[in-house]
Length: 120
Ligand SMILES: [Ca+2]
Image (cartoon, rainbow, N blue to C red; front, top):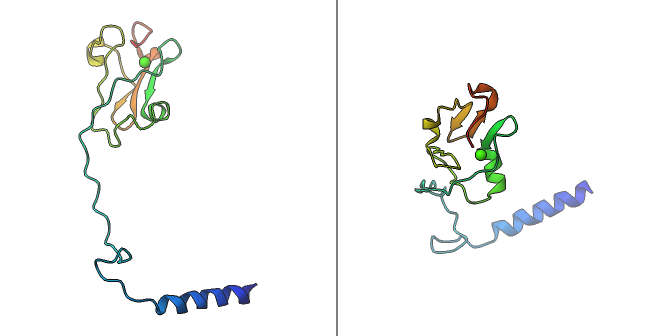
């Protein structure tokens, strides 16, 4: 088995060495490293995957990406949140947020609230 494998490798190397050298116009011409992807301006819809009736309002980015595949910017620059009922800015609700970052999303825990319940 080892002998057969060795033969196959030698044959492949031999064939490779006898191929013509591709020029820059040739589709086989080795390309340099691809340009880094330019960050696009991207604005999503509003998402609401959880209600604060349990332990709080858990709107984690990883969960939102699973529930809304392809609908969330690849590299979020910031996160904005409003309440589902009156579209009040989350910051204006007076809620204390456990997580509020563009890399993780938003988590409001009921136990951190003086009223005992997060806004949705
Ligand atoms: Ca929610």
